[in-house]
Image 1 (cartoon, rainbow, N blue to C red):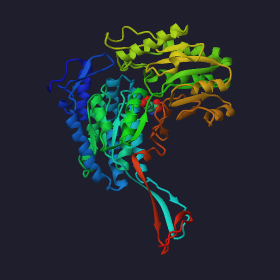
Image 2 (image 1 turned 30 degrees about the vertical axis):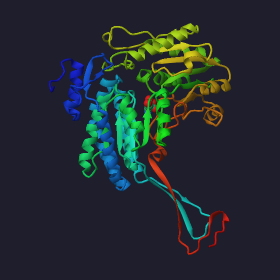
Image 3 (image 1 turned 90 degrees about the vertical axis):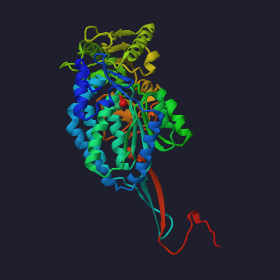
Image 4 (image 1 turned 45 degrees about the vertical axis):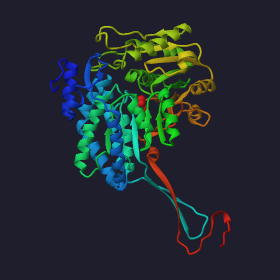
Length: 509
Ligand code: UN1
C-alpha cells in the first residue's frame, strides 16, 4: 500500500502529496478513483467516508462550534493568519497539484493558491471588523444596536474547477466568524482537498488551542453531500456547482430553514461597443473565454459585438482561437489545458452539433490529437458565429465555446445579456462613459458582477463574488459576504428608569 505508483504523473502526484504531508493511506487503496485529465491516468484511490463517519464528523464540528464561538474573533483570526503562512510555504506544491489533478496551466494553479492566501489576509483583517451598527432609537434613555454572533457549523460543497480556492473563500470567513467547517469536495478532485486539510492541520497545530472538529473533510459522492445538506447541525451550507445541483439543494435547505450560500452556473456575456479599444478587448476576451479551458463559472460564453466593429474584431479573435497553444499544461507555453473528463467533451460536442443544426458557423471545437492518449480530452476552443440569440447559447455548457453575435443597439445587447437563466458575471468594452454607466445601472446588466473594459472572469477576492437568478444569489469572499456566516441580534437597552413603549403604545398596569 505504501509503494509509490509506477507511472510518472502518478509518481509526481505521490511525491507532491508526501511533501504536502498527506498520509498515503488517505489516497491509496480506496474505491474513489481519481484521474488526471492531463493523461487520463489514475493518480489516486481515495477511501470514502461512510455515512456514519460523515455524521460523526458533523458531530465533532458541532462540538467544536460550542467552544469556538466563545474564542474572541481576533484570536480566531490568528488561526487564519497561520493558515495563510502555511499556504505561502506550500504554494508551489499545492499549485502544481492543482495542475496535475484539474489540468490548469501552472500560472492558474498557482493563482488559485494565491487567491487562498489573499482571502486569508482579508479574513485576518476582518476578524477585527465584524461590525454591527448603532441605531437611532425613538425612545429616550435607550440605546439600540446590532451584534453579530457565530452561526454554527458551515458545510461547504465545492466544484472541481476551483478545488482549493472555493474552500478557502468559505473556510477563511467561516473560521473568523466563529463557524467550524465541514467540507465535501468534488469527487473529481479529492486529492487537492486532502492536501489543503494537511496544510490546515499544520496551522491548527501551531495555533495550539483549537478544538477538535474545527475543520472536517468528507470524501464521497452524492449521499455524503446530501447528509451535509439535510443535517440539522449544519447551520449554513455553501454549495458551488451547477444550477441543477442548486435546484436539488435549495429546497432541502429551505425545508429545514437552513441558510444557503448558492454559487451556481453562469452564462456570462461581454459587449464590445463601437468605441471599444479593440486590442485590449481582444486580450480580455481571449483570457475570459479560453482560460481554464472554458471551465470557470465566470467564463465568457456569449459575445455581442457592435455591427460597426464586428469585422475588425471577430476575424482577429478567430485567428487567436486558431493558434492558441492547446496542450499538456506542464509544457511551457500552453494556455489551454484539457477538459476535466469525457462527459465535458461529450457535452461540448452536443452543443456544437446543436449549433450546426441552427446553421451557425463553428470555428474550432474539435478534439486535438497527439497530446496524450485516448483517455485525455484536449479540444481546440470553439467560436460559434450565430445569427440569432438562441439555442445552445441560452444555456451554460462547461467547456470553451464562445457564441458570437452582431448587435445594432445597446438596448438589444443588454436585453440579450439578461435573457438567460444565469446571472453571474458580465462585461462591456467601451470608452463611452454613458454606455459604461448604463451597463452598470439598474437598467443595465442584471448580473452579480458587471465589469467595464475587462472580461467577466478573474475576479479578485475583495469584492463580493456571486450572482443572481439561477446563479443562486449567494455571495462569497469580500465586501460584507461574511454576514452570511453569522447571525444578527438586534439589542435594545433601556438605561432610564422609565419604560416608554415604541409607537406610543400605552400599557399602564
Ligand atoms: C469559479 O469558477 O467557480 O472570478 C470561480 C473568477 C475566479 C473565481 C471563479 N476568481 O474567475
